[in-house]
Length: 240
Length: 217
Image 1 (spheres, helix red, strand yellow):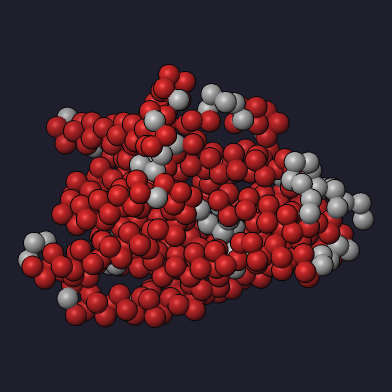
Image 2: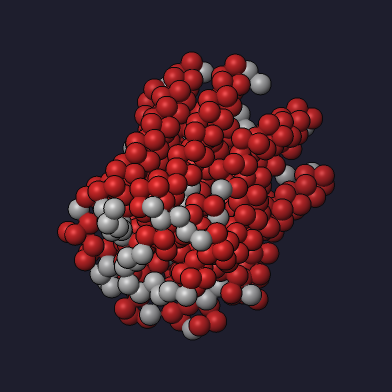
């Protein structure tokens, strides 16, 4: 069988994986929506959650698409498409491909033509990320059981516990923004972008509260994110 | 655990173990179709370069994100990926907007809806993008747009932080200062931000516990 990174066979594999991901997502979406209604959550609130998340997801999804474009230069389109649709992220897939290429002594500057090298990269990309998919079902009971224990023992501390976990995550990303400040003014760009995003969100909050623009709640995060990204495009050529 | 949660756990396990098979079938299918089984040593050497880090990160991520995302959200998010840059912020933003608490059944429902929606939209954007790649690749590769996507994380977390930090500033201040100082002192850690999320979580939990005991929060 003649091998090509963009063969019909690879596309068929990709379509199968994509159908699986869509089916699982749709299954959980429908179940959660129905349960939400049973719990008395208004349909408007549930639909707002769907619309808000959908709008907010578009920009990060395009960023993931850029990841596919980056990897497609040497792996073709279907394999990166599969990997970025299931478990993957560019921050992992690129080092995995590079590590295998280095081990085999080849360069990733050109499209791979040897199926054995291609399959070795596919195996490393797959096996390297397996704990993320195998561990949730194994550890779920213990982790959720632990959370229930904490909540039953002291419900206020249980709430604070979860809020603190989210704040810990946000803090790590906010801190990361300061990593390049020693590089001079260009290193401050991520901080300016962060501040602009925060400011736009603040303005949205004011409009929602003071001008009663409730509809804005659905789009506030997407607006602040895209607004800050546009700001990054404008400011980088000036001070970058 | 009520019936819904038990069923979610059961269905989640079925889906995720099926996902394990689907994910493993991709390299198996490539090897079988092209008669191209790689040398074991090549795979092992490649794995040695990434597995020590990513297996550790995988374990840490499961322990860190499972309580935040809930049962359904976790089973879905760990299959569809892009956890820190997309699924966790989606769930957090949705729970905040719907005014439900994480860890409650309402929180579980909203988090699952957000993660499922995010997964579907991402998949559809990728499908559309791949179909029209020849048309849009020059735009995506345009140097003008590079700063926009290079700064997607500060653009995302700036908006998210203003809501969440302002509401919980007492809990936020310690992990925030810790992380800013850490990244100022060791800028090279920026590439390992995923590993530092649990560190931020531990600092936040430690500070919250002390403040809670002292009656400050």
